[in-house]
Length: 97
Image (cartoon, rainbow, N blue to C red; front, side, top):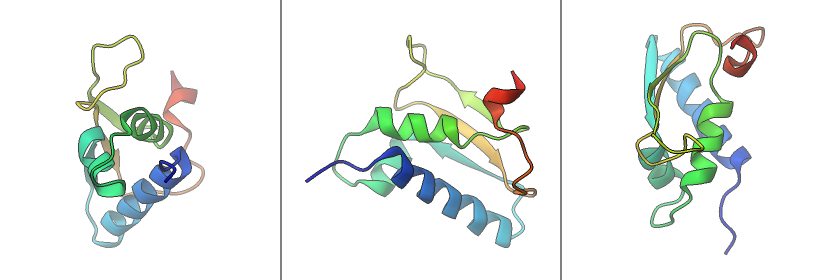
């Protein structure tokens, strides 16, 4: 059985963001280990989870815990996604650096 893709993880993250938005939550915090367990229980796919987490970051979101690895990937990666404004005009986090 093939492992999930970055797109699969992105879909889950976006669902989580919209669920939070619809509940009027200001933000959600997502951890790589927890996201991996949610999307693929019993499978280790940390690199893919981390790629999706970074790709889903938008302007104003925060990296709370960045693993001290060369790639910045690891189970400890934790970010805060702000969900009050999910308008498509928000720039990607990477474009703001």
